[in-house]
Image (cartoon, rainbow, N blue to C red):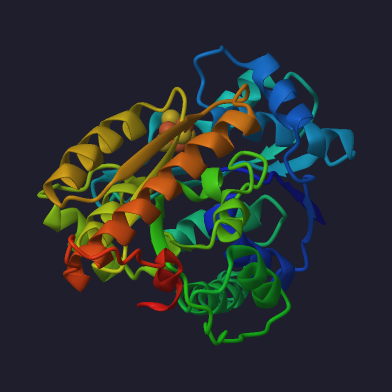
Length: 350
Ligand code: SF4
């Protein structure tokens, strides 16, 4: 039994769970290859131009799995993750979208997760998936779900401790848990606000984590926060949650805006995303209230790396200058003296 999983959309949140679950059931997983320019171009060629980038990428990954000869592809419809908290229409209708744009002969392993529906929960979703492989023993499915949670929880323990997404996933899939000792001190800290499928896909995000690390910037994301912290972030911006992925965006932004160690916020949004444009508008308004500098980067399949880096560098440079000015003010330097501060010292100040 084999299942193809496209590296897109819920893959970036849930793969540790899917891995534990399918492996325990004896179902072999075939992943699509990492995103390339070709993945984007092929995906974009099958959908209307206005479609958001993550969906174009997802379609490209489905095509890649078909190239590999996989004939059963997992395309869940994640409607709602908590009562009255919904995903956007593209995520909810993902199986229909794929069926209509990819006109090839293959089976979509689809299942619906809708926690707003009465008497419908995760086990119904998992049962729906397993039964398509002829597995209907509920105890067996429950046991596999426990294996899924184990891998998922291990991944979250490591990523919450500050370990990079890639490392945490790799260890979790090997059944290992490590807590990294974070000893490096960074002069600047940034909160990166986006959906997992935008920032953890290295082609989509143009390796933004590595680029910021090279600029000596410590990056925080929603992965380091608990549900309580993100709920608190949403409440502190005076919002009521409606969109399922508001936790990653509004919640993380609200939480980090109040966090004194965060020098600035970068939001990374996909062109063509309706919910993001609403959320980012609110986030920018509130960033002014909290006096946090914010940079919003909108990406699509045409976004060039050079312009992207320039905007990142300019923003980081501004944060450095702002922090330096703040520290100089704190030192209460007499402007009559010809003392020229050595600004390198900020490297060692907390
Ligand atoms: S939330 Fe936005 S980026 Fe994500 S699938 Fe929906 S429209 Fe696309």
